[in-house]
Length: 202
Image (cartoon, rainbow, N blue to C red):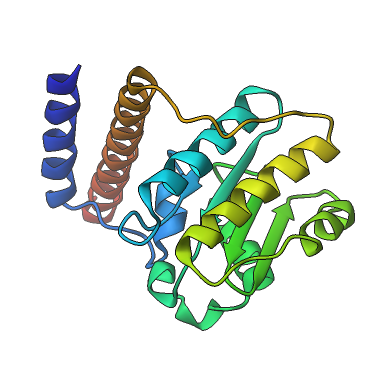
């Protein structure tokens, strides 16, 4: 399985070099196309990485679809740093970026608050739930607030979730799914670009 992951990753990089580029400078919009939680692994401690990943997985598996982005600094926003400390506005921005692929619940966690969007749904109840959750000053506290938020949001919808750490097999399976998802997106991007060039030359 590890060999398959490596081979797919190499192929994805090769195809990317052939012409596929990121459509924008917002890292979370790329990551959340193929996985359900975004965070900076260089900043969030490993234990909190495992906890937020597990609680988001549990929520989705138990009937509460949601994707989460932990934004611990303006660096995590890529080219849209103007939305730093504006979680509600960034949630709307990111939701728009993902709308072609995903229209479900989207939670943003920044040090100064939460953003929550669910396309074509009234989110007043969710906003009230999030307003009661305190976010600490550290990166670990940011992730902990994300875990608490997902648990409370899901509980309000009658869904119980846990933050138990995933097993090795699940982690490897997730990595393979992510690589395959990225590969598919890259192939589609290259194909679209070639089609556009062919039509232009014709």
